[in-house]
Amino acid sequence: MISIYNFKDYRLFLKERFAELKKGDPRFSYRFFNRLAGIQSSGFIKLVMDGKRNLAQDGIRKIAKGLKFNEQERKYFEALVNFNQSRTNEEKDFYYRELCLHQPNHKIKKLTDAEYHLFSHWFYVVILEALRFDTHKKKDIHWLQNRIKPTIKLQAIDKAVKELKLLNLVSESDNGTLHVREVAMMTTPDEVKSVQVANFHTQMSEMAIHSIRHDAPSYREFSGLTVATSKKGFNHIKKTLQEFRRRLHTITEKQEGQAKTIVAHINLQLFQLSREEE
Image 1 (spheres, rainbow, N blue to C red):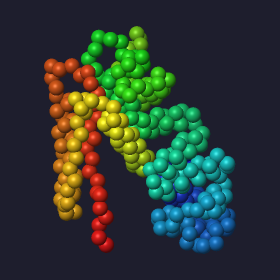
Image 2: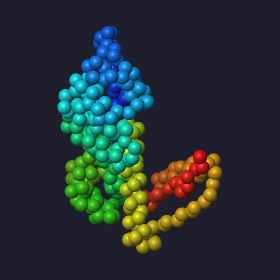
Image 3: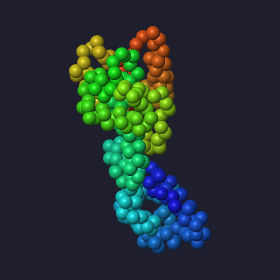
Image 4: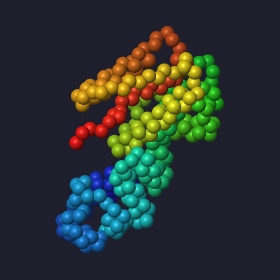
């Protein structure tokens, strides 16, 4: 039977579970399910599946009853519904952590947590880049703590390294030296990825504020430009920034003959400061 724990989209789960139930018993119908769940409206389930209706607490309870969920499955389903229906990144972040909490398989939960933390904690990416430094010193968690700014607690760095190992992004030699592995990133459901990316940009923006307040001008560069433009012009600026970002990445990777000793983050930001006329 299809497991709810394999889904990050409750509407997709409902579609596939109902198709499975229909295949197992041709007599199965929405009307039959509605009787089991105590749902009055005959078209309710279909509207939910098609994204035309959201589920409130009562609807969550009734569907869980109709699908005969146990308590842990019900809690996961409830968190999944709230995750999918959240409107702010803060809400999505909260309910995604609830999803991880209710995953029954410890290994799956551990892997899910590790992947989520990769971009939800700014220093995970910094660790990966710092391990690319050319140095004769032993690169371990103590070395990382001395190099990362602002300072991160050793316990947090140790946890990050363990999770990066779990994701096969970091390896460790017999002498305890850490190495970054040049492997492809793991794939993540789009909705989960959007929360990760939002968390990452939020934290890096906070790091930028910290740099403005605490770093000397020689260690940073900030500039801004406020302009009036058209919708077409706005999209053109956005595309230009994306192309510039790719060009910058190419430049940083082709510094031949120069040892990499600094991890830097470049914020390219474009956002509207006015509402469009209706």
